[in-house]
Image (cartoon, rainbow, N blue to C red; front, side, top):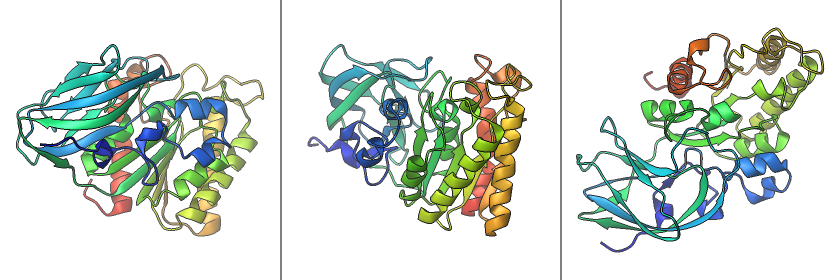
Amino acid sequence: MDRIDPESLVRGVLPSLSWSAGSRLPAAQSAKLTHDTVRAARVPAGVHLAFTGTATALDFDVRLGERTSVPAPGVPLAFVVRAGRLPVSVVPVPGGDGTVRIPLPEREPGEVVRVYLPEAVEVRVDGVSPVGGSLAPAPRGPLWVVYGDSISQGWSVTECGLAWPSLVAAGLGLDLVNLGFAGAARGELQAADVVGASEAAAVAVAWGTNAWSSLPTDAAQIGQTMRVFLTALRQGLPRAPVVVVSPIRRPDAEDVPNRFGATHAELRTALEEAVDEFAVATGDERITLVRGLGLVPDAELADGLHPGDDGHRSLAAGVAPHVAAGLGLPA
């Protein structure tokens, strides 16, 4: 079979974008956002190629760029191949530009195969050639956009595809665009506008943990920021179901004031109150608040802050039923 344009297979980017640009954000919004957010957007969190067919392998024509700034620290520098419940395979990134062969598992022709791009280095796939059979783009599900911080991006899973948004999307048959930005996610108006313009069928919003220390603020400001974020989001997506997940427990910060006198628990409460007040004030019955405090046990935090694989599974289990309910899908 002839060489295929990889853009027909790419999943995990906004409908208006091409991964050939190497960012999960549109250029117009990147020009207005902070440098750390723009750099984090170059991490291909959740970006993968999805297809069906009989091919036994794929030849990727790849070009390698610079190291990315904030990949999940435990993921391998490799392409990760997933197909349903079949064993996962990992193919190391080559030392330079050229062709890399990706063996595929033995499977039924209709099984969706997903090949996740490595997060730690910029990779452009210029062409895809199936080996030993054919392939076709995988069917698309409803578009689900998730905005958040490093936890949404996928810190600290051990393999691409194990972050909680990816787990929810896989379980519900959704097309995920992961707009998680490690070290950033301030609830910026520009980010809300990106989500609002996405034409998503459903949205999840999960930020706030960084507001305690790395991007410190106080309770009053985080509440107002969430109010403005939801207002802007609703201007673009007036009817899409929105699930807001408040920050999970952070043991070192729950009762410790930050430089502005706010504990992590107080920031969480202020964010939750802002969501509830917005829903009541606007009569918005399509916003659901998932309280994050009890979602991930301390034992499932890989580094005291970010969930490990078990923690991401717990987060996904707590969020998925609400996403399903908003879309009218079985949980």
